[in-house]
Image (cartoon, rainbow, N blue to C red; front, top):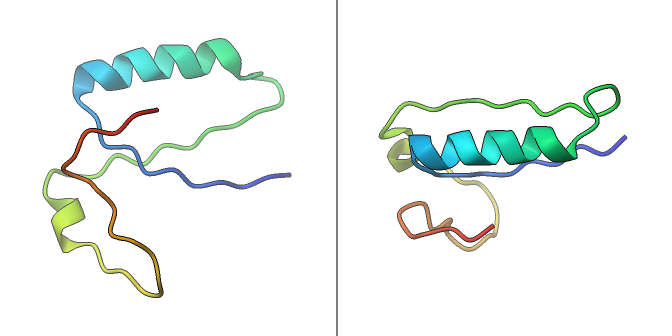
Length: 63
């Protein structure tokens, strides 16, 4: 079992496209993807512990 966490900031239109692509590539019998939708502005209040470069939440993301 592998557990990974990804942060994705996208428009509603991009999310629809990404959701369809994910459904095309996963095995719905064996794979599971859990999605948490955050309210706008939530990323501005995020707290960070430990060493890591700041997440570019307001810059375009390439995936």
